[in-house]
Image (cartoon, rainbow, N blue to C red):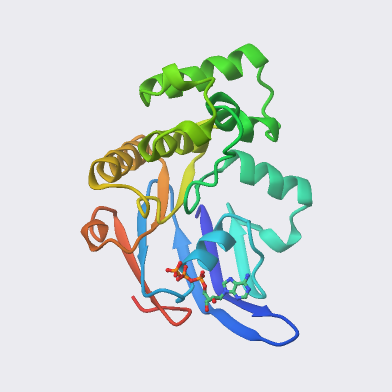
Length: 223
Ligand SMILES: Nc1ncnc2c1ncn2[C@@H]1O[C@H](COP(=O)(O)OP(=O)(O)OP(=O)(O)O)[C@@H](O)[C@H]1O
């Protein structure tokens, strides 16, 4: 199994507040799955995605990646998985506005321990940008791009290290229907190439585009 969660819980706790975001989540994700996660606002979708992607730690339960317990992993091993196993499409894309398109696409490579020559890295970034139709924008700052172009930069950045799983958090949330369709098409192609996608969405149109639909409610998986 690629990813396996057993009885995962997450409590956000501060001096004044205690919020149970996830309770008793058990989930298995295999190779070449396309999982859609839906559910009302605040039910824990982003928290679940962030735990899967090693962005947040759970407060209870067991999470294993390729049979290795995440709790026992070194900082270096986790960083390595973040950079090589996962590609991230975060809410509103989280691009560096003041930096160029090429630098944004190359960012995950800075932290990867896969050894590529600078020339190879740039060639790969340019190849991705070219297939996304943004090769003429490489030296422009992201803040000067349209929403659709940003979406393409984010997708190239997610693909740069050749991940096996893309974690997408409401990736079409800020897009019009044409750009949404294009993004979904790209995710479906990534899946077709033998990879996995886990996508959180509020859009009912996408409920059945994957190989599995998970519905969440109040920190639980409903079905
Ligand atoms: N950093 C945090 N500190 C405290 N509480 C948090 C934090 N992040 C999330 N929560 C709470 O945990 C619960 C689940 O939040 P989460 O963002 O995972 O939900 P969601 O289903 O993704 O919501 P939405 O669809 O609105 O994005 C919510 O009640 C939220 O207020």
